[in-house]
Image (cartoon, rainbow, N blue to C red; front, side):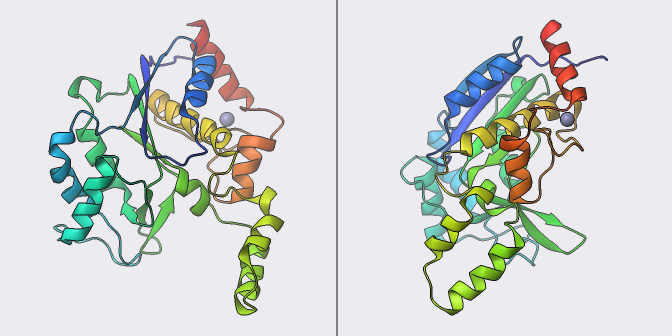
Length: 266
Ligand SMILES: [Zn+2]
């Protein structure tokens, strides 16, 4: 099997969830991709702080207000929205609660990558707590995502919590809890093992698998695998995320295990 060359993996932290330990992900990638250099870079905005206002305006224009309406080509964000984004770029707030258009956001991060690194011999992986969504033509609405692959691949810790669906029983019980005004914390405790929450100690373990999907995207153009027990499985349910990334008896299916070995024997 011919395996393309990957020279370097660069990890960025754009305000990811507290439970995410990027150094641990770097160590993991180092173990799997022995021949590839790994670098942790921090915020992608760190060398463009003087352009914070310009980027803030662009990012504020990507805010999705209505998930069923496609964003206008020339949005006009409010002053307060731009100021909020500027504070965020400058690292003065980590607040969240905004849904962004994912491909536009990726385009902005692409601009921040040096020209000579904008190719697939680099895997740029950006961790953020921003929740982003992409438009789905089949049901004509935006869907929140854990990941958008490309240069860079964006991985959202908020997306891990919000994008894959929770067990059906959870939604049924949640309605009852809300009707009876019962404490939702009790419900979350009941389902703890069955979905990933905020500041969840399993977040780093889950993201190791998504980071490997980003690596495979750079290597082959395809981040995914059909095998539910493989870390490259494209999970749509929380229980699939937990199975593929934590509970499965193996990390990668035989095919992907062989590819990783071939890369290390290069
Ligand atoms: Zn696989």
